[in-house]
Image 1 (cartoon, rainbow, N blue to C red):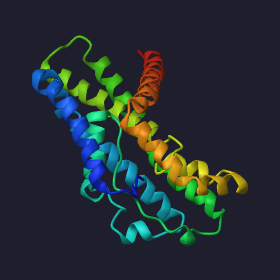
Image 2: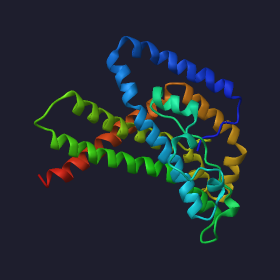
Image 3: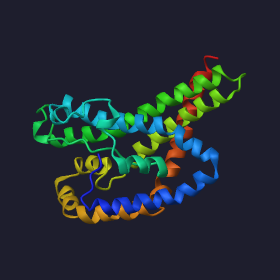
Image 4: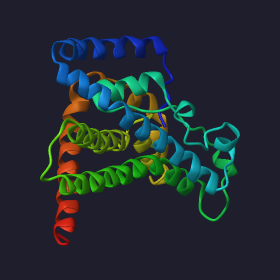
Length: 246
């Protein structure tokens, strides 16, 4: 899903900056530190299912490369990228280890470009699906425990909320149409021939645009409102559906 072509030492510097920026807040605020711990299961689920979705769809479309590389599994160790996981932990958006595909292996039921676009969108689509599942479980939990209150219930609801937010963060962030994100692969494969040529010629420039967006507050300014908006929308829809049965 996410593959950098530059020296990874640059990434380690960036991730160190993000970590230092947030570390003081976690140390001084026990609630923030608790939130960090409670978000770990959601991060494992979000990244694992995202990458598995890429691998599963590629396999179904005829490319067995992910299967051969051991990516057709729900074992988190096969999918976690250390830098991307820490970014998701500290910044609310990140990535997993890229699933490699060979488009020439796809079946001929559709064009190679269409198949590659379908594989690319599978990861974010899985995250949105998981966000809905977590929202349903959260609403059921809140309804079932509305007259109860204890620390265990509070922890469970917090973990479910993180499940929604982190999956939305991973899904929305990766739909940004800049390389090397999934959104760039989706866009490239649906562009007309001339536009695709321009996109390929300017790949490195677009890549640098992404890096600038990523290491500045721009990424958060773009992604955070979308996460909050989609979160509110999902919760309202699910709540309205369940209220009809109460």
